[in-house]
Length: 288
Image: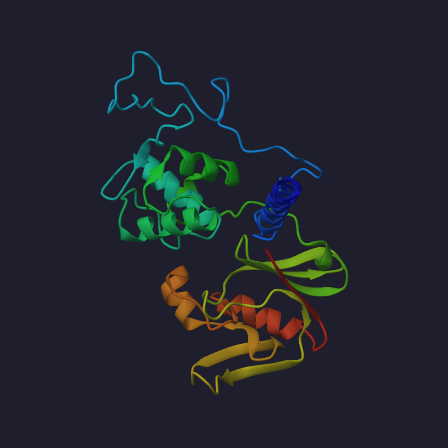
């Protein structure tokens, strides 16, 4: 009898020890705890009201695909107003307006040719629009907002009236060669007054013209590039090998080309006059 009692007690103790060892082993498996501190929630099958378990609609059958609804946020594509091959007075106005901001360097003809396509692409790309080369309603409205109605002389290609733009505040004191990449113009400013303005072009994306505040440190009237062996008349160096100078290529090709980082001027008479007025130490400001 006594022996049977001892055996039963030994078996009970062994069972308790087995349960304790099992809990310890489970804790040592490294299973992730509930993200809430102190939570003791156990895994249970979701109830019928659990939002994570959507109930099937009675009308749906296995294999049925939901009908796709058109996106309400999708906006219609802008309407194309002018494109390659178009001939109209509106094209002539387009060309004159592009010329005002330096994107069209030719006489307005009213014919939407390769030069106009390239000009529109450049204008679109600069403003984050799709570079299609077509003038759609979005491109046209953006251009109207940046330009003025062309005059008869502009439509005929006899003159280009660039819209007025505020000079960078850094150009308003002292003697400054003030260069705007936005309007592609160079203004010679003395004590806040503009003495002259001329068209300019800059380096390509691979040889960009530096931006910031510099000063003229060297002038060379008949300079020739030691790297590219090309003439750089009336050169006024402001940052390393970058200078403001006359460019025969700019005069011939316009904005279809680019410099190697210099600020090109195509008006030889204007740059010659500027060269005679600028002194070493005068400020150069290049900005967007």
